[in-house]
Image (cartoon, rainbow, N blue to C red):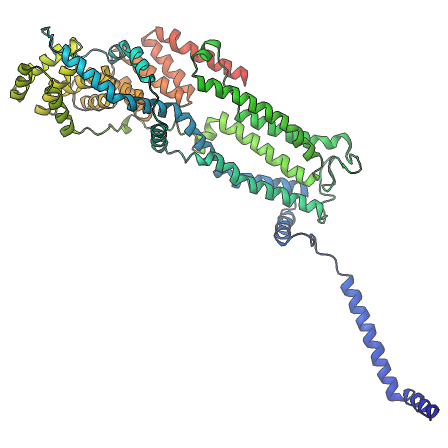
Length: 559
């Protein structure tokens, strides 16, 4: 029975219908085999093993490479330049924020003045009211009030400085003045000094990762996309595993160039000005300590170049091309931003030199009501006879009050002088001679904000051109003593412009302009102003011009 079943099965398989089924089965298997061979023959996606973001970036760079027709080494360099250019606004902001540190001495000085002003004012007022009892008649007129501000202020500079240094202002007050100065100059927040490099670093790492990814994943064309000795961009300069240098000694060139670029950039950032022995002795202790710290830091960074070189030796040439281009761009950027006035001006980096012109001077506000009240408080301390005379005075007594004030000013009895002058300005608000005398008296007391306000008022209201020039010089000096050079400079410019035939005043105003220009980093203008000043006062050349030229020459040699 089993034999009969096998025979029937053989006859059935041999039938035409069964043969047709076998043909279909065979053809289906052949089609499946062909489809499998087509699938296995498809090329691998470049960088398929990379992460999706990295692969997308490499594909984008490949599109740029294909569109521009550049070799791979030039495409990678273009990527580095593009990243650095896009980061330029952040770098410029960081450099501007770094200028805030230069304001620290001015902030400390302003805080020191504020901290000691109240006690100084009280002691000065008490001593001068007592001295006001010894009056003497000098028969002086308005010309007696025109004594130079510099001669009055210089006599007590040493003792005042000693008293002010006796107590240090609190840190909070220093930071308050530092913030005020920073806002006045439009500088970014100091946090940008650290924030700018931190923001740029991820972009540098990202660019390096893309360049290295091209080499690691053997992107098409990268192995032949190099130049000169580094024709294969996938090779490192030194294979630490096999201790083989695929490119020989020439492979050391790019790593060495990267280290030199980085070292030069650090040297430019941490370079200290060359100072003589006399200048070093005059530096504050904190500045001397900082100079030693910078030297030590520079040594540590130089030692750090060794591990940097070891890392660069094992990086693929594609990443080295990116790294070299980026470091070279950084070095060129550093040199341009520090050495090219045109580039600095174009990028808005000359903040300290971006000063207002003479027409932009804005005097601090003068509160007439508060000044009158202060005058009454000072008058209350005067002898009864003088106190009653001031109380009975009217605008018709203008000349008498001017003579009385001139006597006190000539006798250096500043308390009574202020009381008389403030009473006079209360009676005759637009009295320019009284305003000038108030500016001069406040300057003698080192009360610079009040001095500037009254000098500025005198400059605006006086009809005598010479007195106007002197008033502008007084306002400029008072502003400069407050470290408010952005106001002092236009006032000095007006004083120099209006000095006329007064060569001594013109020379002093030009020296003031030179001093501020030098502080602003504009040595060219400082030298020009001093040369002009030496035409009116030959002593300027020996005292100011030659030392500045010698310092500039020594700085250029050191560079």
